[in-house]
Amino acid sequence: EVQLVESGGHLVQPGGSLRLSCAASGFSFGIYSMNWVRQAPGKGLEWVSHIISSSTTMYYADSVKGRFTISRDNAKNSLYLQMTSLRDEDTAVYYCARDAYWNFDLWGRGTLVTVSS
Amino acid sequence: QSVLTQPPSVSAAPGQKVTISCSGSNSNIGNNYVCWYQQFPGTTPKLLISENNKRPSGIPDRISGSKSGTSATLGITGLQTGDEADYFCGTWDSSLSAYVFGTGTKVTVL
Image (cartoon, each protein chain N blue to C red):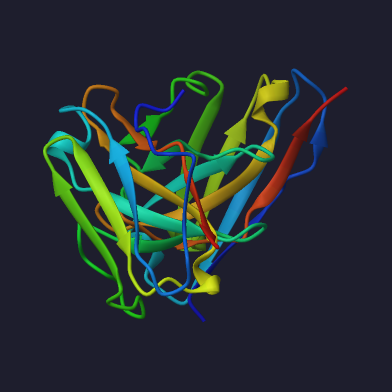
């Protein structure tokens, strides 16, 4: 089955760190660019970060630049998001999304990150 | 605050048509493809339209997309109760070097 499964989200204190993972299956993960997109409770979609298939190019939203790092391991069919210096406003469901020329055609179910003291 | 503006809500009776606008600028919609996503409450977003007007496999032809200048439009004809959802436009912004989503529009079937 073609799918993306996120994991790693949980409650963390402000200033803390967290690493999210996204496991891909059912397709050739290594040829696709990938993204992280988040959605705060009751809010719209916010793009977070993008990484191309070879990991040589990454992009970040200004809101997370310098704090979050996207990476991938094509041998393990996995995408990651290392989050540091977490803030209350980072509280959201984090989705990984497959990227076909900036068309996000496959999404995971998301993992909830809650930043609170 | 999103650089792509959508109306907060649109509504119509079953069987009627709704259109959702997405307004941007030359750095995003004006020079890049637009996608549209559908999201039901508590569920994962789904790609409805890619590259301004292309429907992925399984998306019915009563769903359509178009683009003119710095605006894009999603159209849904033959409205059904199952179309009640939130809809987001999205595109790459060349000035920001970032992907941007629209503010989102809630479709209500009266």
